[in-house]
Length: 426
Ligand code: HAM
Image 1 (cartoon, rainbow, N blue to C red):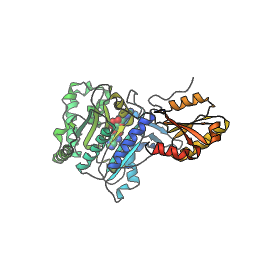
Image 2 (image 1 turned 30 degrees about the vertical axis):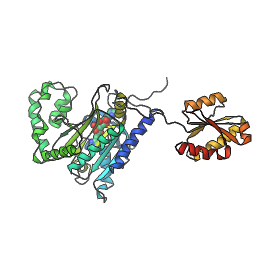
Image 3 (image 1 turned 90 degrees about the horizontal axis):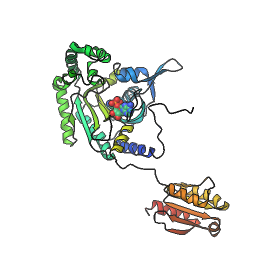
Image 4 (image 1 turned 90 degrees about the vertical axis):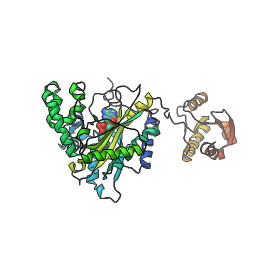
């Protein structure tokens, strides 16, 4: 039996890859405008990093990590997300000591989670994310939200809903935690075994449970917003005021808790409203984290960031029928007839490419008609036809495919001619 691709992964073939490149380029361009710079970290890290960073009680760490022992007996994990790794690098490379602060980074790359695959939920997926480290100014929260919303706007995505919440500071969360324990404890036997465990370890996680979503106590659970102390309330008010000032619409959802442990204060998700998008509507998640840098061994530093997967953005763009780039066209296809012309075509092709003109030729000894067909299929803007006869006269026939117009061009000035016509906007 032939070997097949592992479940939850995909090949991205030419034709589709242009869409990926388009999204990546758009996101990078917006990051450039916002002065965020790229960081690349390894695909695997020590398992400890995610246990400490993402949180021991999260689903990601408990159920979804690709963890293995390497040949040296170390426990290694394929990164399930980017934030912990970026923070590890920030601490290890002492980026906090650099002159320009806050440190504003973006990253892009494959992440791995052993989840049950479905549309928009992969075991290997590509996240694009940003992290701003070193500022506790609510204006940075607004900046990060503005950044992600600008990417979606630039991509032409519609019905994008920004949902925000505040998880408060340590004190507020502690008070809320106690209220949650008091709320769920008397009836905890009616909840799943995971939730029973979560009650003491991390009761906030109960609100995120997929199995017990419909339990009546979920709807009446104490809201974090009622437990925010003055400082946390003021922080949240300022973030909202900045969003209002920037005219960025948002909805406050006090039940939004996020699936990772490191968040304090602002937490958010971006959802897609509307039909045709299937069960998964969240395309982006993020928030502010306070203790993460310290947990990973660095100085106490606040941070905020988000990540979205390219897979989900593509799903959304396709569901909304947003026009997407197709295969890039070719500038010139060189058709040759006869042995001498064939040899000359190889040379011309080399020169065309050196002049910055995308070009190709036949390598399967196809007949002239089949070569012309290939030029058509490849969407070539021009076809250059060279026979032994023309070669002898020092000429080549250039056909503009769209108009069908063709003219004889002197071989000597052919490259110049093609440069003018393909790069001179003609
Ligand atoms: P997250 O909510 O776990 O947050 O993931 C963020 C985004 O990654 C999701 O909204 C979704 O677009 C995408 N995603 C997650 N899992 C999958 C999957 N199995 N298949 C396809 N796409 C997926 C984080 O990862 C945080 N590190 C975000 C963050 C950055 N917070 C602060 N800074």
